[in-house]
Amino acid sequence: MSQVLHPIEQKILKTLAEKKNLTPEELADITKLSLDQIRRGIEWLKFKNLASVTESEKTVVTLGKRGSEALEKGLPERQLVNHLKSLDGYSCELDSAKNYLKNEFGPAIANAKKNGWVEIHETRIMLKGYHDITSEEKIIKILSKTPTGVSADEFDDKDALESLKKRPEFVALSSKKSVLVALTEQGLETSKTVPAEIDFTSISETVSDSEVKVARAIDVQASAPTVFAARSHPLRDVIDEVREIFVGLGFSEIIGDNIQSSFWNFDALFTPQDHPAREMQDTFYLKDLTAGTIAKPDQIKKISQEHKRGWNYEWQNQEAKRLVLRTHTTCVTIRALADQKYDEARLFSIGKVFRNEKLSYKHLAEFHQVEGVVTGKNVTLRNLMGLQTEFYHKMGIKKIKFWPTFFPYTEPSLQSMIYNEKLGKWVELFGMGMFRPEVTKPLGIKNPVLAWGGGIERIAMLKFGLTDVRDLYENKFGWLRSVPKCP
Image 1 (cartoon, rainbow, N blue to C red):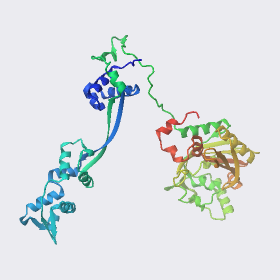
Image 2 (tube, rainbow, N blue to C red; image 1 turned 90 degrees about the vertical axis):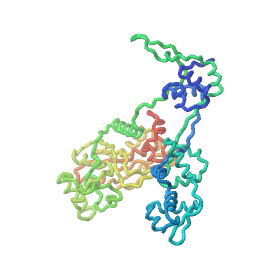
Image 3 (cartoon, helix red, strand yellow; image 1 turned 120 degrees about the vertical axis):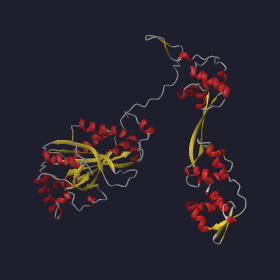
Image 4 (spheres, rainbow, N blue to C red; image 1 turned 180 degrees about the horizontal axis):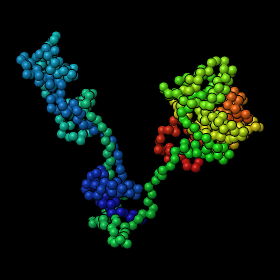
C-alpha cells in the first residue's frame, strides 16, 4: 500500500535523494522552505520510516577576550621574546622584564622556558634558540578567521589546545548539537516515485471567502500530538481532597495568618517560655518585631497565672509578644475556641507551617499541615479514633492503628499509624489527643476538646508512592504529567 505524501515530504525526499545527509538548516536553504516546515516534514517522514535522524554533539572552540588581545600583541612568551630582541645583547634584568610584562611576567617566563626560547642566569634573562610560531599561536590565528568557532576535533595538536584552555579567557568552549537527516532504504525507494514538479499550491489556498481548495489527502492514521493541558499541582489536589473530606464530615474551615504572636503559638498551648522548642534552632522569629495587642486582658492574665502555677516561673509578657512564623496551625484553632466560646463545634485549618529543620528526605522547613478540633459535652477519645479512621478510609488508607504517646498540650495522646505497602512497615502520620485542662480552662473553654494534626506532604508521599518529600517540590515535568488527576 503506497503512502500518501505531503508536498513538503515530497520536497525533502527529493532533496535528500540527491544530496544524501543534510542538516535541517541545509534542507531549508536548498528547498526554500521555512525551517519550521522542514522540521515538521522530517517528523512526518520519521513516523513513516522514510527518514532517519542522527544527533551528535561536539565541542566548539572560539576566541576569548585575552585570545583576541594575544592576536594583536602576541602571547606573553612572544611579547617577552620580541622585547629581548629589541635590546642590546638580547638580554635584560629580570626586574626589567617584570616591569615590562607586568601581570603577564609569570606565564611569559614559564612558557618561554618550556619552548626553549630563554634561559636565566642569576638575575638576568637571555634569549636563545629558535623562535618559530607555536601550535598555540596557530590555533589563535585559525580561531580569529572563524568567529563562529571551530570544532575541537579539527585541531591536530590536542596538547596545544589543552594548554590554551588552561589559560584564563584565551579560548572559550561551548557545546553544539547537530542533526543530520538521511533517507532510509524505504525512503530512497519512495523518493523515486516523487514527481519532478511538486505542487505546493495545494497546501492551503483560499479561492474565495466561502470556498477553500483542499487538494491533498489527510493521513487519518497519523498520531496526534501530545497535549499537556494546564492542571493543578498534585500536592494542591491532595490539599483540596483533604479539605473536601472534612467539609463532608461536617467541619468548618478557619483561616489564620502565617505570622503569629508567641502567645497564641506557644503560651496559650501551655508551652513554657524556656522550652527548647521556642529557641532559634526550632523556630523562625521575625527580627526586631513584636505584636501590639496579643489577646484580651483577661486571657493574658489567666494564661500567665496558669504558667506560674504549672511551671513555677515568672511569665514574661514581652516574650509572648515576639512574632514567629507559625510552627503549627493549632494556634488558629485554639484562638477560635477561646474567642467564640463554642459549646459544640467541628473546626479545621489547612495552611503552611514553618520549622527550622535540616532539609532531608522526610523533613522540610516549610510544609502544609491540617489540624482540627471537636468540642462537645460528651466527646471522648474513642470519638477521635473513629473520626480519624473515617478520614483515612476516605483517603483510601485501610490499615490503621493507634499507639499511646506524649504531646505537650494533649493528655491522653495518641499517634496514628498506617501501613505503607511499598515500605512494608507501619509509619506514623497524625498526632492527636484531648487538650489538657491547663490549655482549655484559662481560656474559658468548658467542654472537652479533641485535637489532631499532621503534615499533608506525608499523605501525598504515601498517595503517590514517593520516598523523598522533596520530590513534591522539584517540578519535574515527567512526574507531574504522569500523576493521574483522579487516582
